[in-house]
Image (cartoon, rainbow, N blue to C red; front, top):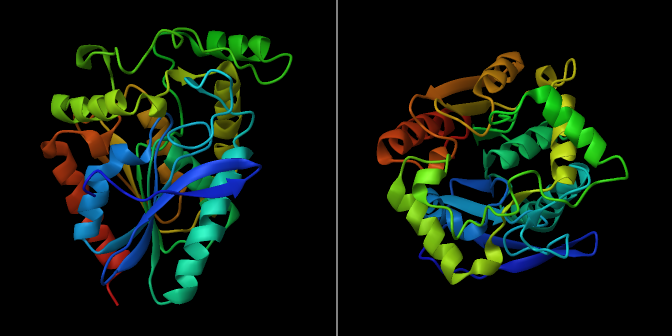
Length: 308
């Protein structure tokens, strides 16, 4: 991806979701790329280019409330949702309106997924609810548990219950109101050890500040906690039978790596690999860590979704 692309919009729940596809001349598979909370299509330009070089036909989108999709609050800097089932409908729209027609035209192509963080969490929900749809998936630091970042969990949960007592709160989670991505220096962030790639994202946001988010609301956090509990319910992970390669970040300070490993261990056809030293955004990390990802990803897809 050269930095420019032709987005289009999906209609779901009266909202416009920004989506894009990146065709391959001789595709080996259709690949659904799902980004994480606060992210946007442009941030994945390098990754999309690497997938294109591997002959994947890439389909992607921005979740409601972020990127170039319609925002859900008067303050566009807020990442808000009432319930994760709304995100499920976003993914369903992408699958029904974009992926299904492509599959109808190219039925022999395997369908695979690559998802990060919240995107990985939501793809797991899809794999559980729609078994057999994907031939294989790779998940980078999927959101199976959230790091409280210094606050005890009982306080986070109690505050979430109290502040959402009248319905999903649109107030920022403590500390997010002043966390402008355009003013957050590399030394203060906790998602990558690669200063150049962090600066690249910063430059995109500086050029397109309408894409940025500060962080989640209490309503988003409550919805996330409910969905995490759902994933940890009895027999949930055990019924996800799609072959899955799951990457854990060894220095993840956003999501809970131990919870991720435990969840992957319950999935019957999942392999979990830890990339020691990597921060949360493995795909935006230094080459020493990204190289480990691509080596494992390529070997996995060669076995699970080989070229036909």
